[in-house]
Image (cartoon, rainbow, N blue to C red; front, side, top):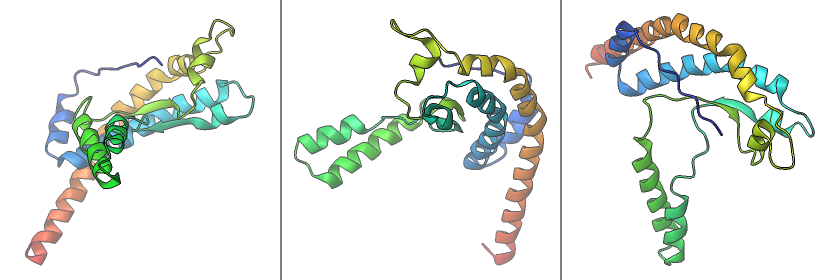
Length: 176
């Protein structure tokens, strides 16, 4: 499926404020805003998706996970080598950790989850004409999504900073 990347420039103050937060807090703050921004796109895609059984429509999600297959090969190779399930799980975990650093600091996926033929609906095939539902949803709501990000990110960063400060004060009061 097509991957669209949007780069927003000119938000240096927000980036500086995010960098003052702990890494996990900053990532989760970004994910909350991106999830909220992705919902109008997902809602429109659900409206436009072809409905035969409803599985495609119902599978459209806004999620930080795309359902990666990282580590599956390593797991299978360890099992075939007779290393046992514990070693295979360890190999899979190591591969997933190694792959985790790839990509952006925070990403959000909007689209059908675990529907093997969803792309055929969007783009068509030799035997079937396309029935686009994701691209029109993106085109209809991309500006709204960007407005949500621009409008909400500052407030979410401030809330997160207050929570972090409160947590630090509480730990300091306990003597920690």
